[in-house]
Image (cartoon, rainbow, N blue to C red):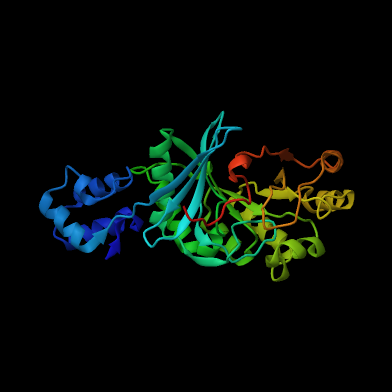
Length: 339
Protein backbone atom coordinates (compact mmCIF):
# COMPACT_ATOMS: atom_id res chain seq x y z
CA UNK A 1 0.00 0.00 0.00
CA UNK A 2 1.06 3.59 -0.65
CA UNK A 3 1.58 6.33 1.94
CA UNK A 4 -0.81 8.84 0.37
CA UNK A 5 0.15 11.79 2.60
CA UNK A 6 3.75 11.65 1.35
CA UNK A 7 2.58 12.24 -2.24
CA UNK A 8 2.70 15.74 -3.67
CA UNK A 9 -0.33 17.12 -5.49
CA UNK A 10 0.98 16.17 -8.94
CA UNK A 11 1.58 12.56 -7.86
CA UNK A 12 -1.80 12.40 -6.17
CA UNK A 13 -3.45 13.75 -9.30
CA UNK A 14 -1.74 11.08 -11.40
CA UNK A 15 -2.81 8.36 -8.97
CA UNK A 16 -6.45 9.50 -9.11
CA UNK A 17 -6.29 9.66 -12.90
CA UNK A 18 -5.19 6.01 -12.93
CA UNK A 19 -8.36 5.26 -10.95
CA UNK A 20 -10.41 7.04 -13.59
CA UNK A 21 -11.23 9.96 -11.32
CA UNK A 22 -11.37 13.65 -12.31
CA UNK A 23 -8.48 15.96 -11.43
CA UNK A 24 -10.42 17.99 -8.84
CA UNK A 25 -10.72 14.93 -6.59
CA UNK A 26 -6.97 15.00 -5.99
CA UNK A 27 -7.09 18.53 -4.61
CA UNK A 28 -10.05 17.64 -2.38
CA UNK A 29 -8.15 14.68 -0.93
CA UNK A 30 -4.93 16.70 -0.57
CA UNK A 31 -6.77 19.37 1.43
CA UNK A 32 -8.34 16.74 3.71
CA UNK A 33 -4.96 15.09 4.36
CA UNK A 34 -3.44 18.43 5.31
CA UNK A 35 -6.26 19.08 7.76
CA UNK A 36 -5.08 16.02 9.70
CA UNK A 37 -7.87 13.51 9.07
CA UNK A 38 -7.07 10.03 10.31
CA UNK A 39 -8.71 8.11 7.49
CA UNK A 40 -10.55 8.32 4.20
CA UNK A 41 -13.97 7.90 5.80
CA UNK A 42 -13.63 11.39 7.29
CA UNK A 43 -13.50 12.90 3.79
CA UNK A 44 -17.21 13.71 3.59
CA UNK A 45 -17.21 15.22 0.10
CA UNK A 46 -15.53 12.14 -1.43
CA UNK A 47 -17.96 9.49 -2.80
CA UNK A 48 -18.05 6.29 -0.74
CA UNK A 49 -17.10 4.17 -3.75
CA UNK A 50 -13.90 6.19 -4.17
CA UNK A 51 -13.19 6.09 -0.44
CA UNK A 52 -13.43 2.29 -0.57
CA UNK A 53 -10.93 2.19 -3.46
CA UNK A 54 -8.57 4.50 -1.59
CA UNK A 55 -8.77 2.28 1.50
CA UNK A 56 -7.75 -0.68 -0.66
CA UNK A 57 -4.68 0.99 -2.24
CA UNK A 58 -3.48 3.66 0.20
CA UNK A 59 -3.06 4.34 3.91
CA UNK A 60 -3.19 7.54 5.95
CA UNK A 61 -0.50 8.01 8.61
CA UNK A 62 -1.72 9.23 12.01
CA UNK A 63 0.50 8.97 15.10
CA UNK A 64 -0.71 8.03 18.56
CA UNK A 65 -0.16 10.66 21.23
CA UNK A 66 1.82 8.64 23.77
CA UNK A 67 2.42 11.54 26.16
CA UNK A 68 2.07 15.29 26.43
CA UNK A 69 4.07 17.39 28.90
CA UNK A 70 3.73 21.07 29.74
CA UNK A 71 6.59 23.10 31.16
CA UNK A 72 5.69 24.74 34.45
CA UNK A 73 8.41 27.32 33.77
CA UNK A 74 7.41 28.69 30.36
CA UNK A 75 4.44 26.73 28.98
CA UNK A 76 6.45 24.83 26.38
CA UNK A 77 4.70 21.66 25.17
CA UNK A 78 6.50 18.40 24.48
CA UNK A 79 4.84 15.57 22.57
CA UNK A 80 5.86 11.93 22.38
CA UNK A 81 4.39 10.36 19.25
CA UNK A 82 4.07 6.63 18.68
CA UNK A 83 4.35 5.88 14.97
CA UNK A 84 2.68 3.16 12.94
CA UNK A 85 5.48 0.66 13.52
CA UNK A 86 5.64 1.33 17.27
CA UNK A 87 8.73 3.57 17.16
CA UNK A 88 8.58 6.91 18.95
CA UNK A 89 9.80 10.46 18.37
CA UNK A 90 9.41 13.75 20.21
CA UNK A 91 8.49 17.24 19.05
CA UNK A 92 8.15 20.52 20.93
CA UNK A 93 5.85 23.55 20.59
CA UNK A 94 7.20 26.88 21.87
CA UNK A 95 5.30 30.17 22.05
CA UNK A 96 6.97 33.49 21.25
CA UNK A 97 5.70 37.02 20.68
CA UNK A 98 6.02 36.50 16.92
CA UNK A 99 4.03 33.25 16.90
CA UNK A 100 4.20 29.55 17.73
CA UNK A 101 7.16 27.44 16.68
CA UNK A 102 7.34 23.66 16.47
CA UNK A 103 10.61 21.75 16.66
CA UNK A 104 10.18 18.48 14.78
CA UNK A 105 12.18 15.27 14.45
CA UNK A 106 13.35 13.99 11.07
CA UNK A 107 14.66 10.54 12.06
CA UNK A 108 14.01 7.89 14.69
CA UNK A 109 17.30 8.21 16.52
CA UNK A 110 20.49 9.70 15.05
CA UNK A 111 23.80 8.32 13.79
CA UNK A 112 25.93 11.46 14.29
CA UNK A 113 27.10 10.75 17.86
CA UNK A 114 27.48 14.29 19.21
CA UNK A 115 28.50 13.80 22.83
CA UNK A 116 26.25 16.54 24.25
CA UNK A 117 23.01 15.32 22.66
CA UNK A 118 20.44 12.82 23.94
CA UNK A 119 18.97 12.21 20.47
CA UNK A 120 21.92 10.12 19.36
CA UNK A 121 21.81 7.70 22.31
CA UNK A 122 21.00 4.30 20.81
CA UNK A 123 21.99 5.37 17.29
CA UNK A 124 19.83 5.61 14.18
CA UNK A 125 16.81 3.34 13.78
CA UNK A 126 15.26 4.69 10.57
CA UNK A 127 14.34 7.80 8.60
CA UNK A 128 10.96 9.43 9.01
CA UNK A 129 8.69 9.58 5.97
CA UNK A 130 7.55 13.02 4.77
CA UNK A 131 4.07 12.24 6.15
CA UNK A 132 5.50 11.45 9.60
CA UNK A 133 7.22 14.84 9.72
CA UNK A 134 4.08 16.58 8.52
CA UNK A 135 2.01 14.73 11.12
CA UNK A 136 4.03 16.25 13.95
CA UNK A 137 2.93 19.71 12.80
CA UNK A 138 -0.66 18.75 12.02
CA UNK A 139 -1.43 16.86 15.21
CA UNK A 140 0.50 19.15 17.57
CA UNK A 141 -1.40 22.10 16.13
CA UNK A 142 -4.68 20.24 16.55
CA UNK A 143 -3.90 19.26 20.13
CA UNK A 144 -2.68 22.61 21.40
CA UNK A 145 -5.25 24.68 19.53
CA UNK A 146 -2.60 27.17 18.43
CA UNK A 147 -1.68 27.95 14.84
CA UNK A 148 1.87 26.84 14.09
CA UNK A 149 3.59 29.63 12.16
CA UNK A 150 7.24 28.55 12.31
CA UNK A 151 9.06 25.22 12.01
CA UNK A 152 12.56 24.25 13.09
CA UNK A 153 13.97 20.91 11.96
CA UNK A 154 16.12 20.57 15.07
CA UNK A 155 14.57 17.63 16.90
CA UNK A 156 15.74 14.02 16.81
CA UNK A 157 17.90 13.21 13.79
CA UNK A 158 20.10 14.94 11.21
CA UNK A 159 17.78 16.43 8.55
CA UNK A 160 20.36 16.30 5.76
CA UNK A 161 20.92 12.60 6.47
CA UNK A 162 17.28 12.13 5.40
CA UNK A 163 17.65 14.51 2.48
CA UNK A 164 15.00 13.41 -0.02
CA UNK A 165 12.25 12.88 2.57
CA UNK A 166 13.00 16.24 4.19
CA UNK A 167 12.78 18.00 0.82
CA UNK A 168 9.41 16.39 0.17
CA UNK A 169 8.21 17.45 3.64
CA UNK A 170 9.27 21.04 2.89
CA UNK A 171 7.34 20.93 -0.38
CA UNK A 172 4.23 19.60 1.37
CA UNK A 173 4.21 21.87 4.42
CA UNK A 174 4.70 25.01 2.32
CA UNK A 175 2.01 24.14 -0.25
CA UNK A 176 -0.70 26.79 -0.63
CA UNK A 177 -3.45 24.14 -0.35
CA UNK A 178 -1.91 22.68 2.78
CA UNK A 179 -0.49 24.36 5.89
CA UNK A 180 1.10 27.03 3.69
CA UNK A 181 4.04 27.71 6.01
CA UNK A 182 6.54 29.66 3.89
CA UNK A 183 10.21 28.72 3.60
CA UNK A 184 11.29 31.91 5.36
CA UNK A 185 9.47 30.58 8.44
CA UNK A 186 11.41 27.30 8.41
CA UNK A 187 14.88 26.58 9.83
CA UNK A 188 16.85 23.44 9.05
CA UNK A 189 19.71 22.37 11.29
CA UNK A 190 22.75 20.33 10.31
CA UNK A 191 25.84 19.14 12.13
CA UNK A 192 27.84 19.74 8.94
CA UNK A 193 27.21 17.24 6.12
CA UNK A 194 29.05 19.44 3.64
CA UNK A 195 28.11 17.60 0.43
CA UNK A 196 24.44 17.85 1.40
CA UNK A 197 24.83 21.55 2.26
CA UNK A 198 26.08 22.05 -1.31
CA UNK A 199 23.18 20.02 -2.67
CA UNK A 200 20.69 22.03 -0.62
CA UNK A 201 22.26 25.29 -1.74
CA UNK A 202 21.84 24.32 -5.38
CA UNK A 203 18.06 24.29 -4.85
CA UNK A 204 17.99 27.94 -3.77
CA UNK A 205 15.37 27.44 -1.07
CA UNK A 206 14.69 30.48 1.09
CA UNK A 207 14.75 28.66 4.42
CA UNK A 208 17.26 29.40 7.18
CA UNK A 209 20.21 27.03 7.45
CA UNK A 210 21.33 26.53 11.05
CA UNK A 211 24.75 24.96 11.45
CA UNK A 212 25.66 23.21 14.69
CA UNK A 213 29.16 24.60 15.12
CA UNK A 214 29.82 24.31 18.89
CA UNK A 215 33.59 24.85 18.54
CA UNK A 216 35.84 27.06 16.38
CA UNK A 217 38.73 24.61 15.92
CA UNK A 218 39.20 20.99 14.88
CA UNK A 219 40.75 19.80 18.15
CA UNK A 220 37.76 20.93 20.23
CA UNK A 221 35.03 20.19 17.69
CA UNK A 222 36.42 16.76 16.84
CA UNK A 223 36.27 15.82 20.52
CA UNK A 224 32.55 16.52 20.83
CA UNK A 225 31.26 16.03 17.27
CA UNK A 226 32.45 12.94 15.34
CA UNK A 227 31.35 14.53 12.04
CA UNK A 228 34.33 16.88 12.33
CA UNK A 229 36.71 13.99 11.77
CA UNK A 230 35.48 13.63 8.18
CA UNK A 231 34.22 17.20 7.54
CA UNK A 232 36.52 19.56 9.44
CA UNK A 233 35.91 23.20 10.35
CA UNK A 234 37.60 24.62 7.26
CA UNK A 235 35.60 22.32 4.95
CA UNK A 236 32.39 23.20 6.77
CA UNK A 237 32.99 26.95 6.52
CA UNK A 238 33.80 26.66 2.82
CA UNK A 239 30.50 24.85 2.26
CA UNK A 240 28.66 27.56 4.23
CA UNK A 241 30.25 30.31 2.13
CA UNK A 242 29.15 28.53 -1.03
CA UNK A 243 25.64 28.14 0.39
CA UNK A 244 25.40 31.86 1.16
CA UNK A 245 26.68 32.76 -2.32
CA UNK A 246 24.03 30.56 -3.94
CA UNK A 247 21.02 31.49 -1.80
CA UNK A 248 21.76 34.92 -0.34
CA UNK A 249 20.38 33.58 2.95
CA UNK A 250 22.25 34.43 6.15
CA UNK A 251 23.42 31.34 8.01
CA UNK A 252 22.85 30.85 11.73
CA UNK A 253 25.52 29.06 13.75
CA UNK A 254 24.55 27.22 16.92
CA UNK A 255 26.97 27.13 19.84
CA UNK A 256 26.18 25.25 23.07
CA UNK A 257 28.51 26.52 25.78
CA UNK A 258 30.07 23.63 27.71
CA UNK A 259 32.00 24.20 30.91
CA UNK A 260 35.74 23.77 30.39
CA UNK A 261 35.31 22.40 26.86
CA UNK A 262 34.55 25.22 24.41
CA UNK A 263 34.00 28.30 26.58
CA UNK A 264 37.47 29.75 27.19
CA UNK A 265 38.69 33.18 26.11
CA UNK A 266 40.85 31.51 23.46
CA UNK A 267 37.81 29.73 22.03
CA UNK A 268 36.02 33.09 21.87
CA UNK A 269 38.92 34.72 20.04
CA UNK A 270 39.08 31.86 17.55
CA UNK A 271 35.34 32.12 17.04
CA UNK A 272 35.66 35.83 16.25
CA UNK A 273 38.35 35.08 13.68
CA UNK A 274 36.24 32.30 12.16
CA UNK A 275 32.97 34.23 11.82
CA UNK A 276 34.05 37.85 11.34
CA UNK A 277 32.86 39.22 8.00
CA UNK A 278 30.75 36.16 7.20
CA UNK A 279 27.42 37.98 7.49
CA UNK A 280 26.18 35.21 9.77
CA UNK A 281 24.36 35.15 13.10
CA UNK A 282 25.60 33.23 16.13
CA UNK A 283 23.13 31.64 18.56
CA UNK A 284 24.68 30.93 21.94
CA UNK A 285 22.96 28.71 24.47
CA UNK A 286 24.09 27.23 27.75
CA UNK A 287 24.36 23.44 27.45
CA UNK A 288 21.29 21.57 28.58
CA UNK A 289 21.80 18.60 30.88
CA UNK A 290 21.60 15.04 29.55
CA UNK A 291 21.52 12.44 32.32
CA UNK A 292 23.87 10.03 30.53
CA UNK A 293 26.51 12.69 29.85
CA UNK A 294 28.97 14.25 32.35
CA UNK A 295 29.13 17.60 30.52
CA UNK A 296 27.87 20.73 32.26
CA UNK A 297 26.83 24.20 31.09
CA UNK A 298 29.32 27.05 31.24
CA UNK A 299 29.47 29.03 34.42
CA UNK A 300 27.99 32.50 34.23
CA UNK A 301 31.31 34.30 34.66
CA UNK A 302 32.83 32.34 31.77
CA UNK A 303 29.80 32.99 29.57
CA UNK A 304 29.96 36.70 30.34
CA UNK A 305 33.67 36.88 29.47
CA UNK A 306 33.04 34.88 26.30
CA UNK A 307 30.29 37.20 25.07
CA UNK A 308 32.35 40.29 25.89
CA UNK A 309 35.05 39.07 23.49
CA UNK A 310 32.43 38.35 20.82
CA UNK A 311 30.98 41.84 21.24
CA UNK A 312 34.36 43.53 20.95
CA UNK A 313 34.95 41.48 17.81
CA UNK A 314 31.70 42.77 16.25
CA UNK A 315 30.15 39.32 16.04
CA UNK A 316 26.37 39.37 15.60
CA UNK A 317 25.07 37.02 18.30
CA UNK A 318 22.07 36.20 20.49
CA UNK A 319 22.09 34.40 23.84
CA UNK A 320 19.03 32.18 23.51
CA UNK A 321 16.56 31.32 26.24
CA UNK A 322 16.45 27.68 27.29
CA UNK A 323 12.80 26.70 27.01
CA UNK A 324 11.24 23.54 28.43
CA UNK A 325 14.19 22.42 30.53
CA UNK A 326 11.98 21.11 33.33
CA UNK A 327 10.42 18.58 30.92
CA UNK A 328 13.63 17.75 29.02
CA UNK A 329 12.35 19.62 25.96
CA UNK A 330 15.30 21.98 25.46
CA UNK A 331 17.98 21.79 22.76
CA UNK A 332 19.84 18.49 22.85
CA UNK A 333 17.40 16.80 25.23
CA UNK A 334 14.94 15.17 22.83
CA UNK A 335 15.16 11.40 22.55
CA UNK A 336 13.34 8.21 21.70
CA UNK A 337 11.19 7.12 24.61
CA UNK A 338 8.51 4.68 25.54
CA UNK A 339 5.32 5.74 27.23
